[in-house]
Length: 379
Image (cartoon, rainbow, N blue to C red; front, top):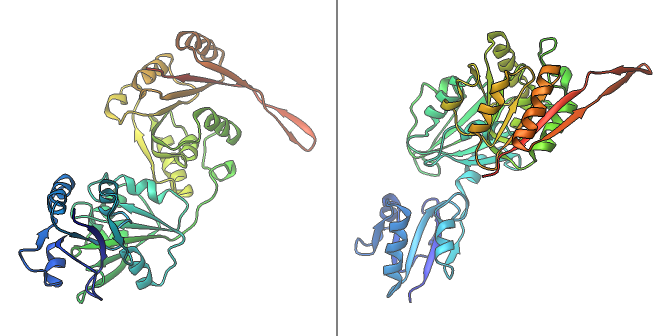
């Protein structure tokens, strides 16, 4: 049985400790002068790479050359799972090289690969607290397309650093705005660092939101909603009747994407402004009326239905929940509360009444109770 090495490679600097048949990108094989009878171009799907290695290892050694660190967003991770007795030879990653070029620390960075992945993942990454996002791009999700996508989604206050042919003789680094990047073609291969040019406040600070009188879910209610939903990050969340977007923005910190569904144009503008104030770029405002829009959206794990929703909206929303999904809704009017009791019985849900008193200048400020309905979908 032959031996397998998985070797990191960022250009010819020293002997990369190869032996036997060598699998790698065509340019790596040529750069190292691997004889044609021992060189295998790795431009194939993973299952074919594994099958090729299994055949080679029956009687010979093999080396797989991978870009950068073999276990950092690399095929090396999958190969280690399959070939447990392999040897991994590490190398500096392209991420480290990129940050060193711009003299920025990467301790405050989030790392993302868009190789064959949904470009909307960039919105989730930019909504986290890290100052930088490092992106492994591909030919489809390249810096120009990423910038165009961000401009289309009205994302602001970002700087792009694009690294073309990093660590090669014809390396080029471009520092620019997302608007400029959206109009420029970049050489392949490339990678990207996005820097946030401002910091954002805590989404529990009610006073920082733009809002209309009477259309706002306060921070203590938002926190209670999260306790009912759970802290585990959710893939898709719907906020139906999003109002000012306060619930959407708060839940965005615990979600991949949040669809803020709102029929009122003025409210939609408020959602967009609050999204900008809090850097909640993974909130996607949608002008539409429920439940008509439901069939056009990704299926959610969580649905929040705001106060004032029509009686049938909750039942229609429940039908759209993913298996084991959670629906929560709020009510304050007698008619809505009566409907909540009916839905609690129908779906075997939970019903909570929240009575809040604020003390200002030693005088009690008693608020009307908020009723919260929770329904779990068990299939």
